[in-house]
Length: 232
Image (cartoon, rainbow, N blue to C red):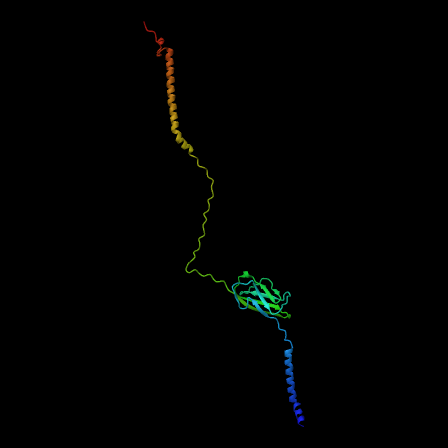
């Protein structure tokens, strides 16, 4: 009789319900340990420059590393890098290698301040994921004023125009005057000599003519035979 009562108690609806709940919990617990976890989507695990990092100048590239291999299909990956004014400084298309995306940047853009990186990729399970982050490019320091010294505007150098050479007529040489001035005394002396010589020659010739005339007449020659006969 006692065993039957015990069996009835164990076979009561409450007992059966409790046993069912316990069995269900045990089964769920075993499934939790035995079933493989659901596959998670890939995610960005590192970046260079990193989020909120400050750099001195625009880097040559932005490098993004993800937790899984990315799709290499054309158009599956897109990266844009913009400055504070919203202008893109990305140079060309992104390059995908396994789980790494590299985006070249225009280092000559001179961008500074907050730089935003926007990316979109297709993960290994075919699910597209996207995100963004920012880093900072330090602005170039402003030039320090040099105390109270003031810089005066430089006076532009004045270039003196070179005079154009003009055709000049050579002045007549006064060598002739100077030569004449040097020789004119000799010219006068020559004229005087000629004049004196001419006078002397004239006197001599005149005297010779007169003597010849007297000689022809037999007068004043000093020849005894030439004396006129004495009067008897």
